[in-house]
Length: 306
Image (spheres, rainbow, N blue to C red):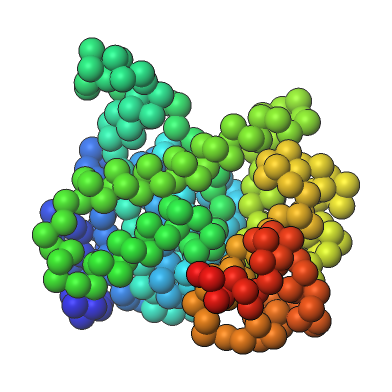
């Protein structure tokens, strides 16, 4: 089924394929799949745009900022502004992209904030200008919205995809992004800063640190490393991380390691010493003590009893 998208732009809403990239219209939604060489694309005064890169890379130029994106990452671009994608190396990109109308977003925004009674009394109500997301390339596996996009991309390579409803797929993605990012915004309000823009920028840098943690669990991650990748001082990232994630960076890293190690222990694919090494524990006995503290059993006993 992937041949459907090779050097083709396929829109699941219209069920239309074209050799040329579409010219997006403001009053239409699109669910695009394509696997092709695209050196440049511009969308002026855009709708909400969600892009998942399965393969390839490039850069989004948004409001005088350059945001690089590469394989297995996704990005949300807020509506009402112009953006341009550039790929100077003209490399092939394999992309799933959603472009959602303002009307669709406003109805969704009402749904997320209304009471059950409000939704019954005003089923078609819109809320204007209340939707805003963080524009940052994020690792798909680290977020429910990213995993949702990966699932839709995988589904799009099967014949079953043709029988799915694009509106429903858009709703699923928006719900996942809302849960990911709106929760982050709620937590960001607790960050000690006067300007809302400063709070959002701090949250954006914490997301970069979070991606770095998830990608580097195999070695010890220092506060200095997180400071460097997030461009926050060690004091700033320590206090802000604790506010947003409810744990210090060190606690968060250890809990994340244990959560992932538990699955490896349970599945039995690797030995205990191999799992310890996989998560940066040079001494398997130290790994065992930490594991027991979290799960109440040694890794070996846990494997036997589950």
